[in-house]
Image (cartoon, rainbow, N blue to C red; front, side):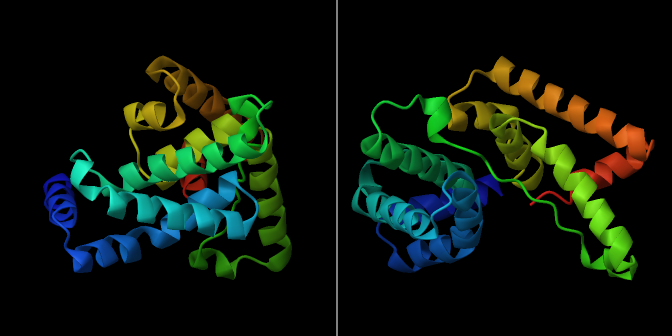
Length: 198
């Protein structure tokens, strides 16, 4: 995939409008979902995504190569959203600019056989466990387990150092695991829980 992304990126940088459209179509939904977790206003998220794509098109010849287009776009969108918030509010620290990172729990279609009462209890438990994490921990969990980014990519994207990302991830997983073990007690079901996060 890295080689394919690199070739796609290079073709886009040469001005291939069709490839640019393909990049947009492939990543727009994931970008919107991520952006909406940082910024609650859907119109602002759409504006920031539009700005990111406009910027990369206008400056495509100066862009460095990337082996992960999704990572590049996520990082650019996060910066754009924080920049937009900074412009509107100069006196807020960068930690507070992000606000509450929203990480929700959704059961899979395989869980449709669960009774409605059990389903609601399970979702409430999962959501409560996630809500006990800090916004930064929720973002790291999302980027790691839902988007598949490495700790190094997450560190660069969130402007944290690598060790801080690793520590935050371990603390978040520890919190989730301890809450999980109180109710379920099985490690395999905890791993499945991580896939319910959206």
